Amino acid sequence: MNYKREFIKFMAESGVLLFGEFTLKSGRHAPYFINTGKYRTGAQIARLGEYYAECFLEHGVDAKTLVGPAYKGIPLAVSTAVALAKRGADVGFCFDRKEAKDHGEGGMFVGMPLENGDKVCIVEDVMTSGKAFREILPKLAAAADVRVTAMLISVDREERGTGNVSAVREAYETYGIPVYPIVTMTDIISAIEDGAIAGREFLPAMKEYRKLYGV
Image 1 (cartoon, rainbow, N blue to C red):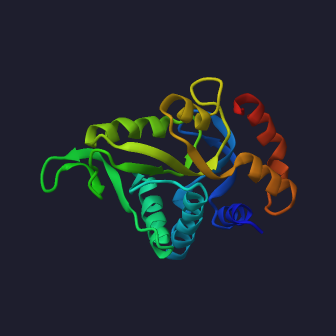
Image 2 (cartoon, rainbow, N blue to C red; image 1 turned 90 degrees about the vertical axis):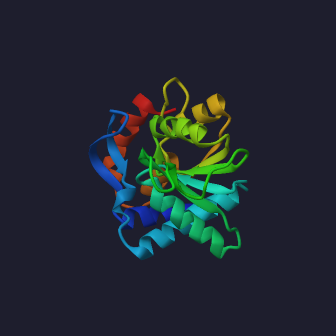
């Protein structure tokens, strides 16, 4: 079993991959939801970091620092940095505050200081419309003249962004930033159809949803 199929089973076992009726941050109503807030134990977050690290190394991402957008991106960036360090790739990590701090060390980011010329990789949970992605970029630009070399996500929902192409493709076409998912919704649907995970009864609704928003 490759790490992608293992990851899908891990999400299902952890209660992260959910089926039902959900309203997304984008305002869309979906029959499935990926809630990384369901990772709640040390063992889970350690294992999650291993999957992100595998994706990072598989795609040869060149970055000095991992950026985890608050709030869900924070444990993702930390766990990925730990997993990479265990594999001999020691990178920094940082995350943004919701409000800039005007005392102490100050600034908008906590963790590895961002400096001009730094190569950074954003670590997030999922990308649907790309809203969260567009929110973090101006914060990074305000902190330093960094270069975002990649973004890692758990799942590419393979949905349209603000136009007629996927949010993942839009990120690349608009900003030149490649987005690497551990798995895609196509991978998840295949896992359901193959019986690797439960959820077959939700397939009709999932496919109808993809007709509306998929690419």
